[in-house]
Image 1 (cartoon, rainbow, N blue to C red):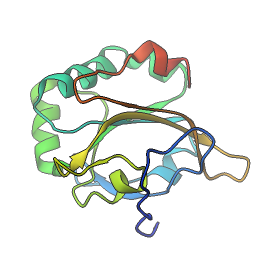
Image 2 (spheres, rainbow, N blue to C red; image 1 turned 45 degrees about the horizontal axis):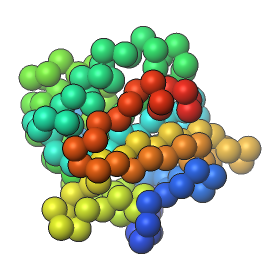
Image 3 (cartoon, rainbow, N blue to C red; image 1 turned 180 degrees about the vertical axis):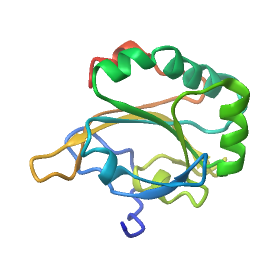
Length: 160
């Protein structure tokens, strides 16, 4: 099991090693980046809060375009600082078809340089992680956005 990743002061960038981590998903099952990336690219969609406007728009878009993500062999996951219980309720209410990860202790958010200190949550960002030649996760593409700016799925899909 991965150790707690080291926090970083600025957002992670393409070409850098992706910190490995294990957190609970909305079903309270462990999910590990290092295991997921063995199967293909992983798109980490960091969002501030469940049950909010732009966050909901992004997650609905992922579900709507699931066939495109699967065709590329990518796993797309949402990640926030909400509890697994909140994420499960939100996924059920909205019909999301993808995994939602709970970073309730903010270790992952801080390790990726995406902690929004004023709100004690994650910044809005998308990080595409692929497998390096050594088998570890490597950032292929990363974009941090303002809180009100939703991800452009076509732009992200092109990076997978």
